[in-house]
Length: 272
Length: 306
Image (tube, rainbow over all chains, first blue to last red; front, side, top):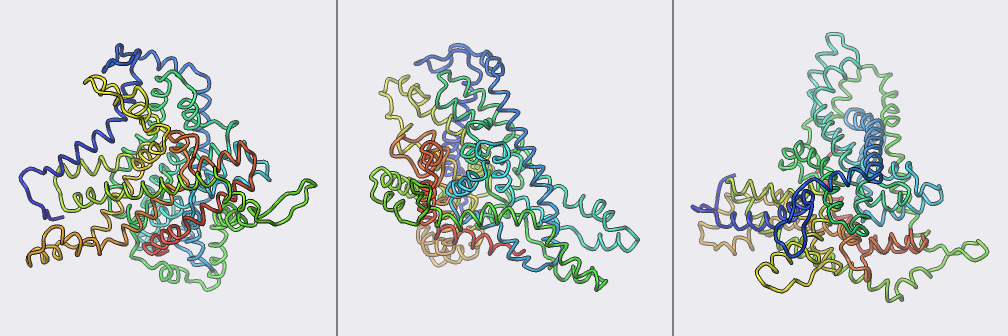
């Protein structure tokens, strides 16, 4: 990209950088400081005592551990189920010709034409009749539906990008269809599919609205526990420590996804 | 994390390839059904849990259950909603929040996107990373951070107190709380969509305009804005869809009354145990968002060939 605005010092950039640092990094830094603070009473500008006291207190709570394991179980089950049903479907959309292929492919967009929480309420009404409210599998189902679009659309693009000539060459020298898929197709499509799986896992881990509407109070995930900490917990540090714990999956996603997000194709996927 | 990125389009036309690879005529018919078989479960899930709930939402909202368990159709739920002061206040605050957020997002993100499009140095790269960062912060952590910074005795109060100034009137638990949170949350995608749209504005066009003496504002108004109108509309539609029925941020940061439609629907459904009324509220949110929704998915679909 050529620089049209050429100046010695990029004052605009500096102003943006300072404002965004204050508005975006600032609040998160405050939470980070709170997490490692033993005592911080108003009106001291810096904490009176730093330390890890509240880490051991938080990690000693049974509700924290049960919601960590609930969140991890849910995210793993949903990601696994999603992979089992979506990857073959993605392969079919990318490679096979069948009646209604285009309309079925775009049908996954349907849910995105509606405000999400309204749709969740409409689904919840159906779950109510099926006695799925307040159950683990009810939450699994609602979160599974949330992963369908990107678990199909991303792998479809991955399968389409595989070099077909290599597959044909392998077939020419006598490789069977599974051998071709295993040795040629999968290694090439693999990294993109892994990204879709990671996205699905992280997205499910943080999914709050479906878990709250369908699962509460029986199914308590980490974000749901965090809501109750914000509403009812007088000790500030519990929430701060939980925030840091809660951020770990996002941080991992951040490390892997930055390159993808910065590319223009990502924004075009949102219609940009 | 509820959105879906889309990697680049393949240059292959797959029907051609399938036709080429399926050499035996007999297997072609089998393949047809193999494809349908492989996509059956996800398609069934979408039909059952997206299409079906949407189609049945309107009849469900019209259903009245009598005391003897019999059902009849009536507009009573809608009549109640549009005559109930509390419901109408909730709808009003939702519309207000959505409009204020959309306006703020444009005011913040358009200059940012213009800067990012026309500058390529290390500061711009840093600014871009900062603008995208909120995408990797779950809204529940954001809510907590907001309370610690802008809430009572938060960091802003601490700093103001430190220099001897009075405390702020905290936006926490006022309608401005969700506005600040939702804008923060929506900055990354708005910036990305606008930057992507600005990619369609060529440097040559702008240089040509500059050569004939156009000022910067004139260039923005006559050259750049007309070319990115579509991207602006997409960004607004996407924002409106997410904000109108947002739940977590208004639930945690907003006032107890009036509440936005998201928390209102949740409370009606779970706490008041009145699903038909909750569905009525959902149908009303659908009605307010349908134009944005259709426009949005049309834009996404246009960018993607199956």
